[in-house]
Amino acid sequence: MNHNEAPIIVGLDIGTTKIAAIAGRKNEYGKLEILGFGRANSNGVQHGQVLNIDQTIKAIQQALENCYESNPDLEISEVYVGIAGHHIKSLQTRGDIVRHDPDTEIKRPEIDQLVNNQRKTFIPAGDQIIDVIPQDFHVDNIQNIKDPVGYNGVKVGANFHIITGDRNAIRNINRSVERSGLTTKDLVLQPLASASAVMSDIDMEAGVAILDIGGGTSDLAVFYEGILKHTAVIPFGGENITNDIRMGLGVLKSQAEAMKVQFGSALADEAKTNAYITIPGLKGMPAKEISVKNLAGIIQARMSEILDFVTYHLKQVGLDSRALNGGIILTGGGSQLKHLIQLTEYTTGLNARIGLPNEHLAPNHIEELKKPMYSTCIGLILKGYSDYDHKYKEFKEKFRKVEVPRNLTVETAEPVKETPAVSVDASARKQKFWDKFKNNLIDLFKEEEDQVIK
Image 1 (tube, rainbow, N blue to C red):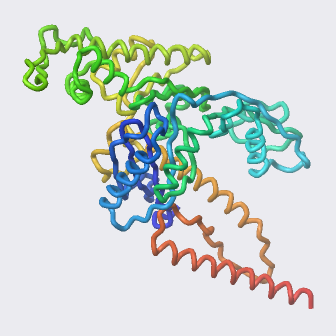
Image 2 (image 1 turned 90 degrees about the vertical axis):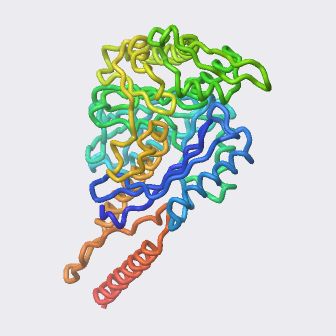
Image 3 (image 1 turned 180 degrees about the vertical axis):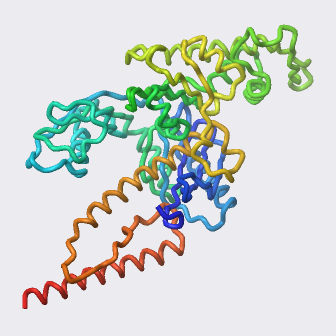
């Protein structure tokens, strides 16, 4: 892909504590160059769900303004949006189609039809299908095929992972985005976005669990043998830890958050017994002495609960410590807690590490974006590129099918690309050029046909 022709894609992460907007484009080495970045505090979102649309719109607009400040040349119209929350559920299905012409090779449209058929799966009233993800395909008696295009057979089918969410929750996200003057290009489950940002092909093959610890929820995605095996949303996150500290130590929420970030530890045994934090008293009241060990004890209790959920989900799908050689990758803002890796390894029996999104970023990216809290947003851009590449290949296949008359030679043209999520003058000029080229090509074919008829 030519660097100058790659579209600019924007990820919008609507979280419980922050809303982030990042614009990026792939360079000639396939790495993301960040062209714009903005964030704002989130007020209208709780546990991953948009509850106050007006406050969420203000936060989105603030994040966009900050993004424009970082790069005034940007024109953002379409965004890939992350979705999470208690309402997210998943189910496994299996589907097949009988082919009309079993002697020909399987084509991409047949696979697309098979996937689209799963969108008719019965789900509870009030829910809506967010995504249908094929796990492994089968053609007749051949099992465990990753991509069946090019095979031939009578029947092609697959196992599917279907992600659903509450219709009203999805509507609230879409309304907030639309009223901010944007179009939702696609809704992406947050743990899948985070996984694509921090995970390599080696991790996927080895078997790995991605735990994205956000403000309102902790999102889990489990991969095994190159396949997405399980997703889950755990209803606790960084905000719960902050509230536990606030209630347990009798301090303000802002003080609880500051203590968690500066002095917090996920292991009480690692905290110094004789260390204390002094909190100023309110309106003339005496200052408070907070034990660092007590603070760590509160954090460890809540983090252990989150990790117990992870262990439970892994057992549900039969993937224990022997199966996941890649261990657990911790990401999201909550993964920055001290000693969290040790607690994770102790609780789950799996190796653990922090997943940073900089594996896919070009070397000259903003230092701030190295933080794991931006994994979802970087992953949303990568999801946009995955869609773009899929459509690019589809167009190339269609373009090859055009039969050129023998006495007419036409140089192979690069396909007409979609209008990118962020439009620039250069892309508009290119679009006009390719439209003109396409029309000229059609005219040439017509003239040739007229000569043949005569």
